[in-house]
Figure 1 (cartoon, rainbow, N blue to C red):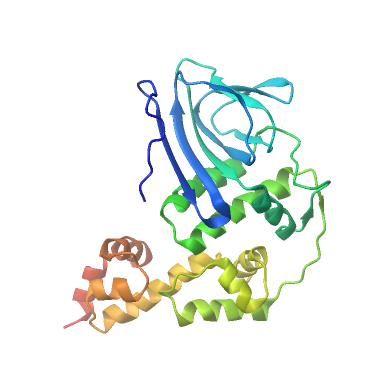
Figure 2 (cartoon, rainbow, N blue to C red):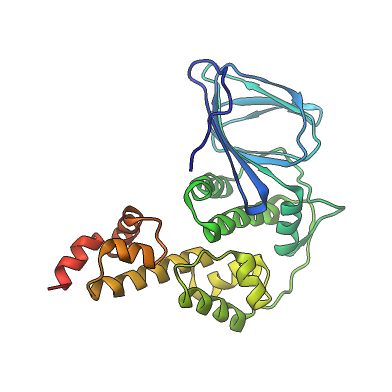
Length: 282
């Protein structure tokens, strides 16, 4: 994926990377600013992310706020806000620009009913280390993961945000549909190389994206994309034992290329596919 620098006139020491992922029509910004400042403006989306360096100052909701490393910042659609460096070194952050429909889907799928319309959050700066760590880790998955991994990562962080910080009330009580989860797992095993989305699995099982994520974790201890990766690696191991070439195994088992297979396989078995194949194939 190529992340284009959208700002041609940034001062020295500043950088941005911006891209879009199709899941939820989500926009992603990784940025480091030193002297750049944002004039008061609004978005038609939720803005949510984590501060990774320096201090950002901004005004919204009639008050001035300072976001420091490890803080999460959240702005509702339509809220006027600005942004500026509050210290000499500026600030760095990783931000998601989220379609309100996706946030509403996340709230409903998490078993929460918004108080009135779209989900609302009491605070614009959240101090929640566990959620900040989860949020920070999402960006690599959004940049490099396949459909199932991107969806799972994005919806998981939004579910955690809503469960821990939304104003809406919980409406719990959905039963775990284990037979449907097993059908979804069988679908992934039947065609591990296929690019499958949560919506695809939902169409076949009748489960929502959030039921699938929760159900896989309950049944197998891992989310759907991790289960898919495990199935692909198991299939790759079988193919290598049979003497297939590494390039063919990568293509047949759903890996983007041989290097992708090598990285994943080493994390799985502790040795590269080449070492594994040489030891077992005459």
